[in-house]
Length: 304
Image 1 (cartoon, one colour):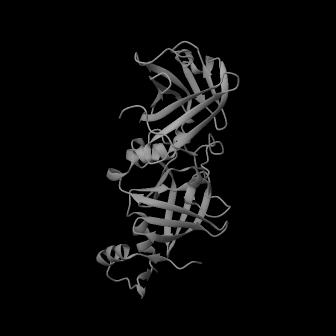
Image 2 (cartoon, rainbow, N blue to C red):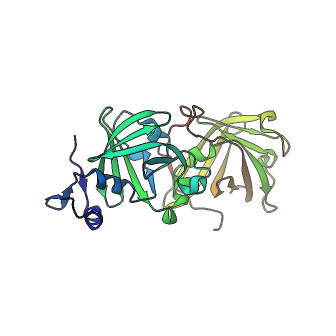
Image 3 (cartoon, rainbow, N blue to C red):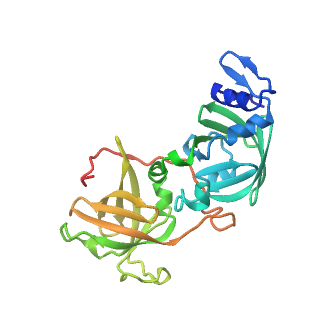
């Protein structure tokens, strides 16, 4: 088992709260032997953001693989498994997904669906912890935030591919008067699946289940060098060339697509929200994986 190391900030917090615990000092690190202090570390932040790209190992802890954030609150484990509703669901903590208890440097989690998991807890720095599953030799890295300073924009833009897949369809609700006429003006619905997109020219307010998908093809989201609040999107139609857009998140149900070639701005609203709770729906279909969108060297065309 790894040595559990806590930084000075955690040590001072624990010392101020419970003076009866004794720590062993080795240079600048502290070896933590207290179950109580392990719990204090887990509760020291409201939200722990799961940095899925930092994961090490070939195994998987299913409930961490699905979650964008987890929270430890007096024995109850909460998770935000959706980007949609993050910051609002459960007062920001997400949904109750299980219970937990702490031992010395470990946390014993009883997840409502995924069962029992015994994870070792390590402090990486003053706001990052590592949860290590010895059974699969896999580590997850979680960054701590308080709810009032959590960067929600970061979550949306860092996980934009998952966000646009959380709705069954996106319905066009606005087209700017400015901009030249172009073929995309006629497309009123978009659907993003893990490996391809579809679009429809069906009339507004069509029931999602009745949509007829007229076009499909591959799509790609790009990061923009030096601009963390902009993504670009290409739609590569199977038979009709491609379209290029600047992609902006307005809120958790609305996106904006700006079409630089025509100068037209479109807004789309999500229809058919796919909520990933604790049941089997989506437990396999929505698991986060390490990913890195390619980087595009362009400058935004739409004024801020």
